[in-house]
Length: 531
Ligand code: 16G
Ligand code: ZN
Image (cartoon, rainbow, N blue to C red; front, side, top):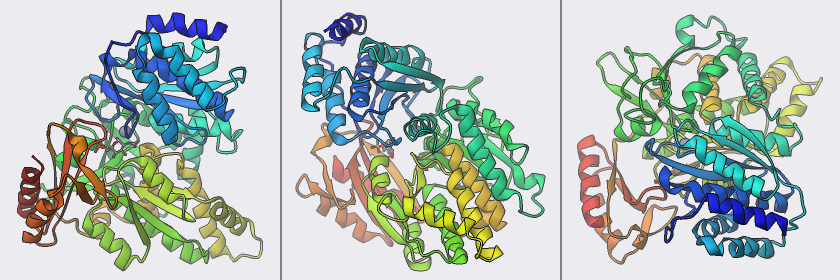
């Protein structure tokens, strides 16, 4: 078939290094950018097949998020903006690893197994982050799409959540919004302005924020967004990519793991600051107090702030909707306690990786999910959205309930439900702080984090570690869990777990305890058990 000839010809331009084996991991393929050209071309092919199969637009995002600038990566976005299914992750691995002469066979195998009609039209949206390698790698994706004679739309430089949003808008015929970057800014900024317009006496100080753009796409896009906000937020953007290196000593991952401020941000005591990661799907807040102590407000604090706000609104509106918070093993023990015991909301724990949290959050009327690293969003069920809308339009409702329903409606519009979105999360957090008249210190004081420490351990083969109970315990190799339990039992309020990383060739160790010294010692003792 002509199409397969096109694939053969074009794949010769994007040859696979013989013997190279890569795996579609937690967040797609991710490795040194020099090894990825053939993978990108093949993901263009696979996205086209997925589009033919689903009869919908599929997204391909070229990014390696918080990894160093030299790395790159790629992930596929399914029709509603969600991650692709496990079977297709398997096809992605199969296609990426087929040697040059076996590519057509591998491709035809997917077509056969999925009973794909090759004549079906296809459409693929492509986006990329600001890494120097992203330009040519996204061209390789487009080459793959065109080799199968499919339609493509190249969004160029966008954040990962923006691409997810475009895919969802396109496949819902605009019901979710316009599939344009401008449409995205308009929808979010209007919702933010509506939410904050009745907040009395917001001073310039309350509107001012410092931003660490991680020298990446987030910096670029938040500046674009700012013009739509009509001075309702006043941002000072640092690490905007004009001089520094992407994610180097800055960005959400650095701040969270190192528990310190990024370089390049001039913060004074009490000022609200936040950091994005390299593709702007994560956000963490922080400030330093008058004694110069650094305070981090991570994904757990964000989930608490948002779920408290939503729960209050639901009570005020008299809406009987079930709200739950989804976390991972990394969630600080204090946050889980606070949510369960004080807030009385349902808390679920899943494995690391957005797809797991997203899936769990879909089971509730309102599912707030955040990883401690700052990746998260809120999902509203169709029924929940309908109930909110009915109440907002009901002429028999009293003014107070109606206003609350309108707040809820604008909150829904402000949230990018397709995936965690640092720009949308930031606007939501700012709106909640403004509506509740809270300072960042008051937000921080809702509960006190247990001191914690994360370490990485390099081992011969990290895959020998097998976990259970949402990665909170190990079941292999034999004896490891017992070796972890011994030091855990020696410390107070202690918890620790280990898991193989899905993005790096390391084992991750997490420990928390009543003091920083204890948490550090525990992390160290547990890493010795892993060797
Ligand atoms: C990826 C995941 C993130 C997870 C991280 C864990 C997505 C979109 N991203 O960045 O959610 O926290 O991996 O990395 O799923 P690790 O397995 O190396 O600890
Ligand atoms: Zn990211």
